[in-house]
Image 1 (cartoon, rainbow, N blue to C red):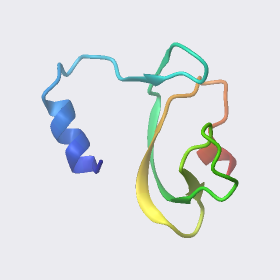
Image 2: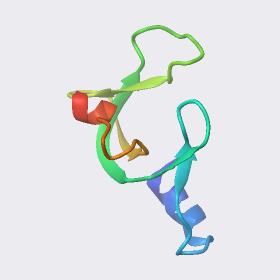
Image 3: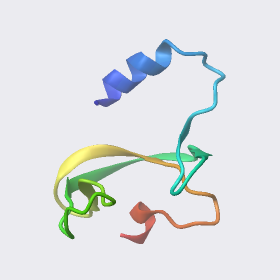
Image 4: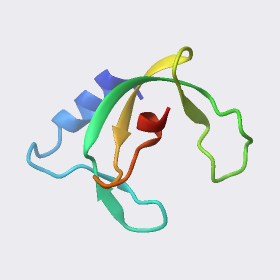
Length: 80
């Protein structure tokens, strides 16, 4: 999905609706930031619980990271 695809889909929804994403184990979290970054194929294995991509500092494809962690937690993007 591209940013244009996301904007189109979101523009069809109520503009005052909360945006949430799946929580780690269960439940949902509210989105708290959106950051531009680079991603590349995940290099640490292909187990089902890993994502297929990882944040990259210097190379990879441009992407938008929608963060859903709690304010007190560090994001993967902030640690890289």
